[in-house]
Image (tube, rainbow, N blue to C red; front, side, top):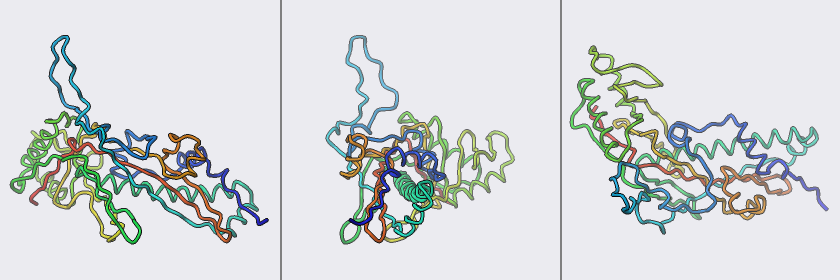
Amino acid sequence: MGFHIDLSKFLTPAKVKDYIKRSPVNPRTFTKELYSKDVDTHPSPVYSMAEIQEVTGNVPLVVRGGEPVNVAGDKLAFSLIEPQPIDITDTLSAVDIMNMMALGDVAVEKLIQEKVNKFRRIVLNTVEALAIDSLDGKINYKMKVQGGYDTFEVNFGKTKRKDASAKPEKLSEFYKLLTAMKLELQKDGYGNNVVTYAGVDVYGLLLDLSNNYTGKAIRVEMANGGIMVGDVLVKPVNSVYTDPQTKAVVKAVPDNQMVMVDLDAPFRLRYLAIDDLRALKQARTASAVATPLFVTYNDKGKNIELEAQSKPLVIPVPQAICWSKVIV
């Protein structure tokens, strides 16, 4: 009988959860600022649109004894989203593993933890790409299929838009544009706690307008990594991701645009159930298969293949997002 390397005790759900907890790898810009407030697992491989759409603005009063107002949103109970998984592998040399085993479990676990950190970084980078993609109310992200690539598409709804009609020549004109964007959000019950992410050219324009402003009517100051204009924080953003198929760089916000988002809106990040019998066997219940990161391994004799899976779904709130194209 051949010698078998057993790494299972280092890859239990509790161990992987602990590795993640101690990991130095953190969510990136849009994941952190928009989606980190409500992160959870979902005990199913699909997600219902009925759980996403909801009424959030003001509602009419109801006459005593009358029927309550339904705030469940559209009647899309049978419309389901089927998120596609992140499925990645890495290889460990059997020689390296044997050397680590000679040093003891602590050395082996350290090696495994480093690989889990690598997987987590890849997963979080992909979640950030999905978060960026969701800023227009839709996800159009490449997925690998046999023989090439296809596109994973989800349409959550239409975002708001308030384009500039002319180039802002004074800070007051830029402020009016921000106010108009905020008003668009307020029409649907949002706009109370907003931040505006500006493309390179728009932020450069705002810097010039701010430096030239000598009045006192509008509050202008550097704060929280951006510029406060009145009660609106405008931040420069250079977040990007690389298209998996074309390798083209996709900017979160185009240079001549800005996007205002209400941070209090119920943006959600869900990790759905993994489609893997090994995960089900390990977790023992279907609900426990829903996890931010499932890691297992295959002993191939000359090397060991570590495999990681995750099924994230970012859920934006289109009514809480307003875009603006600025003439610069």
